[in-house]
Image 1 (cartoon, rainbow, N blue to C red):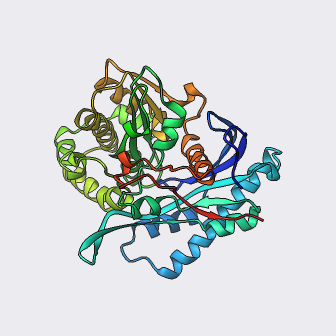
Image 2: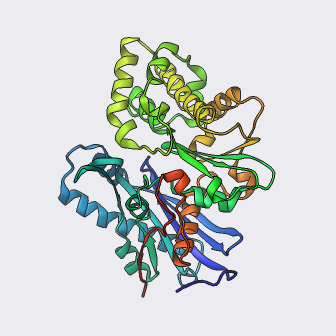
Image 3: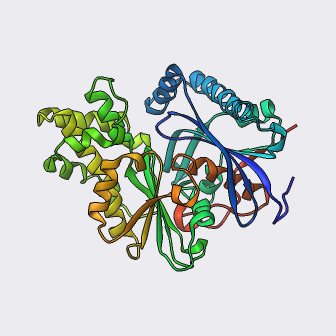
Length: 388
């Protein structure tokens, strides 16, 4: 199966982000020039499954039997998400010609441990693609990160290929700013090619905010809806200054990060320090939110050739009004908008991106961005599991 350059091809993209909320499913029609989103829905994980996934992500010595089992469980969950979407939207399953699945990142260590005298990066995404292909009968491309890492890259970020496809502009310098669990940016030079793209993880997005809010409210709130807690709170400048000393923020790209750095241990240190300072829950939320806003904007100033004309937000953090106001305050001369203005809804873009990556893979196109990941050369990402 190799789609023609100008033939419309229907692809489903699957994504489970660092927050482990559920699986996003996007069905798109794509050719070499454009993408049209046909359907999208997020299917939330049952609470017990989400807890199992997060425990595996945050445990330094996870049980191999549990990893093996949850890998298969997520394969079933991902497959059922596609089947449910087709049933609910009365969409013919047979009309979908390809699936691109990111899976769920269990662990990501881009700099790696030593092997035969040199660093060997590694990454692990679960959500067994063979199960997805078997249950749906559709050819599935998955496990996109390892090939880039084999070529010397960090295996992240992967979405810059899709960002360039969707949002490059002949005259405007743009940043596509995703604020999911982790925040990551893609710099698109006006009129530039893929070789001009700069992309990296800036640091925590919603991950620290959500965890701080959940633990500060003893589980009554799982996240700060619309940033209301942060809006009521006061930023503690001393604690913020301590948090900003984290060496990751000053490390030059290529770079990527995740729950292994900004997960449970990091949040526990945040809360321990906040408790000693006797901060109220709203003040904790405000400080955590400012941490995200400031690390994003400082990354622009430190690592990009110039500031853009436009910042285009996506991900759940774009719905946090207080976070967006903090960004705008730090970037007063820059237009801040969202991908929704360009036809890609906020929560849709990452699933759409993996549909685009799978489409490129099946066409035999290199779809990593070495300038973003640090890979030695362009490569074709993903493992292909044939359908029936």
